[in-house]
Image 1 (cartoon, rainbow, N blue to C red):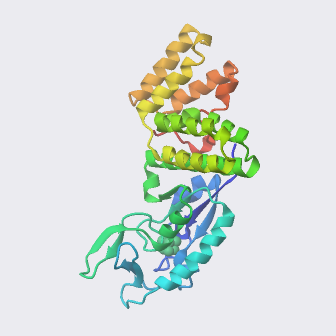
Image 2 (cartoon, rainbow, N blue to C red):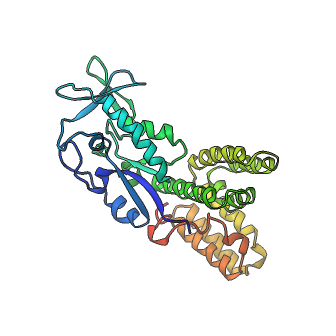
Image 3 (cartoon, rainbow, N blue to C red):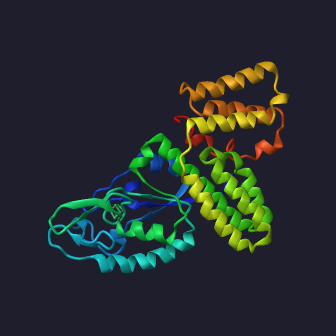
Length: 316
Ligand code: SF4
């Protein structure tokens, strides 16, 4: 099990009354479900940069590449104040070593995508990012990020949390081990998980590890992390999961009785047809891994990675 995961979050999603109108945007799943498994680090750019509660609403205006943050009614420009605070805040956040960040959508400070930027003619284009969200993703390009609304979609949530767990294990590897042997072990234990995202990505990571024996460790780690997080960002699918489960089954097929084989094939098939969630065949695989004492498979994160209480893989 990984150490406790530390993640950033827009403070209003935790129920803090920091919004311009003095209200919050509490997200029950984030606070009360995921919150039992992660340590949230709340950030409210607008309040932390010195603006009051309540305050006049703000929006972004001007050039899409470097928009200004101004109040909607009185047109006061808070961009410099915000940017000064962001520079200080990012240095502090570096010390937290966050494993992910959940941003409040649509906000001119915190929104991650499709934030409105108003043009001179008063018409908005929806291609902006909140000033803080943009600076955060530039400073920490590998930290998984997502908006709260998208996390209500089971598949997107699963994909995001998988990235967070992988990134956290990478942080732990760097902090606790940081050797080439540790990198080989990290890679080996993620084999099947990576293949469910991209077999090509896994093979390229394999090459990086094999060629890495003759390179400085930090260089190999940089290349590996870059490819790792890119591979994890590729969405998995029912077909890819079913194919990986068959591949896993093939590694211990000869140990299974006739009935056990039939049952496992049947459960993978039922999942592939959409009649059962992924957790069903995965639990059966876990059962055989324990029953036949399959030590190589027992270290695979694809089979053993989440706290059960998160109920992941129950809806995908
Ligand atoms: S969206 Fe961001 S800036 Fe706005 S209240 Fe929430 S945390 Fe603060």
